[in-house]
Length: 104
Figure (cartoon, rainbow, N blue to C red):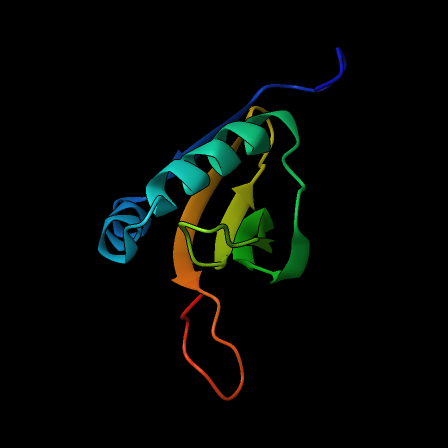
């Protein structure tokens, strides 16, 4: 974050946290690392669509590892004046590949 940027707070919603625990296999740790990174760089990922009320919807993909499935993470960046902004990680899901499941 540069000196002229206002601070950003990122959080994982209860629903996303529960989903991370249900998926297991290091998912919560990976999403927590993304949460911390979003506080430094809030526009990571790809802008999905404009939401109502000044909120911005983004998605990003976390590559899989030997221990964890690849994940798609959706978050909302709400930056109404005055700053700081608030990012809510709202949805975490395993990446589904065409013709197969989520197996590694």
